Image 1 (cartoon, helix red, strand yellow):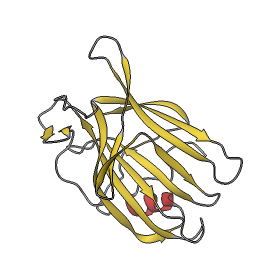
Image 2 (cartoon, one colour):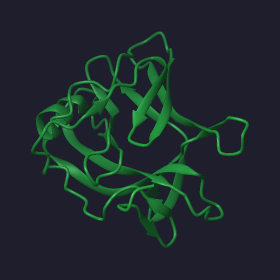
Image 3 (tube, one colour):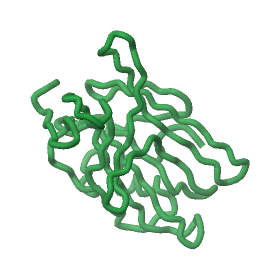
Image 4 (cartoon, helix red, strand yellow):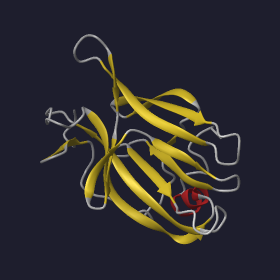
Length: 198
């Protein structure tokens, strides 16, 4: 582990500095990791994650996908596949999620994500975008970006997993969008897709 690791009081060791750029501070093209349908192995700095992206078919315009992350722990000799959960906040309380949902309607995605490789002192990062459907799936609305950093629990803090994503900040899009992927590209320069799926 390098010297940039900062240990949090409650959350284990954070693989980043405490600097959190805002959603609209992106000046260079981030290094986005594609997560395509099926299993994908992804190198994120000193860690290799496995992504699983699967379709929930509805046979209509509202099929959706579920994406989950894992890592293989070899520290105890026998390799063990571990879930990498996502800790966010809901109504002021910490909430643990086990997957991300990608979907919406036929014309617009209401939820998607981007997985970013670490850059300098910044940890690997997960950015989830979501907008409310409003009066219809095609009615443009404000997109909410939630930023999560990849955290490693090196000290074995009880109750925390060995590796997880922890919410660090939130921001809203400057403009209204039908598809959250348009907001990802136009405002954050993170491309028009998280990977091959629907």
